[in-house]
Length: 340
Ligand SMILES: [Zn+2]
Ligand SMILES: [Zn+2]
Image (cartoon, rainbow, N blue to C red):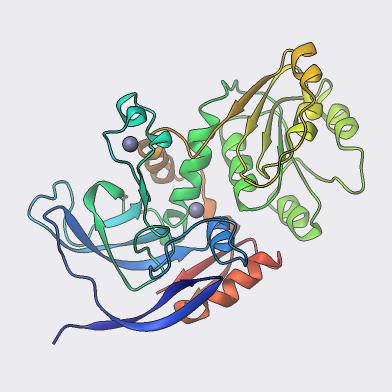
């Protein structure tokens, strides 16, 4: 008799249905069975579960990609992992064969699968994943810090694109979990001032509590003027963690500064003030999930120099996944962790 477990299945149109399924078994030689300890709710999950959906996912799968767990079993071809190891998930499975993979641009693979979007993910007690999607992490890293590996890796990969010098002043638009991960990273890297901007008082208060140098409410202050006042010239680096803030971003940057466009809003299409970019010598980086950020992200978590679990405000059981989604959607939570 095979064991079964109760999991939420994504049915499309924002619907999750709890279904008793057979516990995943090893299938391929390079498969690993992971007992999931916890999985973070991501903005992507909110988009998948929105109606109409703002991010594609395949109906019939288990979603969730910010998982941390313990290796339970593995196929004969798996190397470098043992039962009992703690692992985190690098959820994009690139094909290794398309024109972009061959150029080393794995984040632009045109033929990828994603754990938790196109194939079964980690909002479940058990995950079957191919070994190359799993990264071993030292057990000394607390579970809740390890659970933020994937979003942290996206920020690590993105930061790499804009040459940074210790002392640089950084302005981050959007004080949600991603914006605050950027803030934590830049602070740990030795930024001068780190300034976050948002409209939501909950998020601004949270940033303030975290000790971010300044948390500006863009509905209450003239943000470019205030950033200039705080920095002298404007920010050396500006991050748009929202996805439609390019015009605000280029106004916050000093002359010769850099802008990182990280957030994703596929349906927004703001007109761009090209003159400002040219006249003031700005460098604008579009960055998508990051090129190979995983090894550094593991090392960073193991160093304990960044502890992203400070962003976790709620821990809920799997049966309350939808409540967690609602808490994040209504901005009454910063980061919600689902515990198995
Ligand atoms: Zn995520
Ligand atoms: Zn590819």
